[in-house]
Amino acid sequence: MAGVYVSYPFCAQKCTYCNFASGVFPRELEPRYLEALRNELRNTERAWTPDTVYLGGGTPSLIEPEALAAVLGEIPGDPWPEATMEAAPGGITPEKAAAWRRA
Image 1 (tube, rainbow, N blue to C red):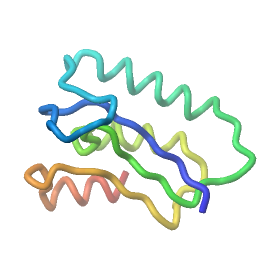
Image 2 (image 1 turned 60 degrees about the vertical axis):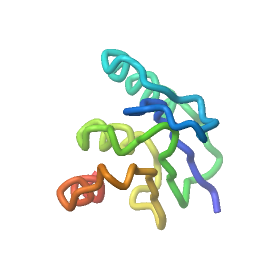
Image 3 (image 1 turned 30 degrees about the vertical axis):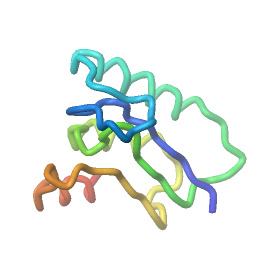
Image 4 (image 1 turned 90 degrees about the vertical axis):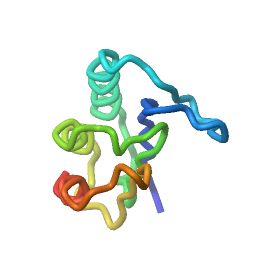
């Protein structure tokens, strides 16, 4: 199954067990990071269409739904058979889950 892994390195706190390139960064960096990410996704040539999209990193559940939709909009193949996102259990609400699904 061909897939795309999208890294979102921003965290509310850095967990001691985490080995990902992530951390507690100033939120002012996020728009620049997301624009660079969208540009990379937009300009990457693929010989295939992804069947799955995985958002990890850091804590991608911190992305605002509109920004998440903009990132996902750059990945071909929507709707994918599978899309997953790491989330901190304490940060999941029915409203957020519904917004993620719409994105």
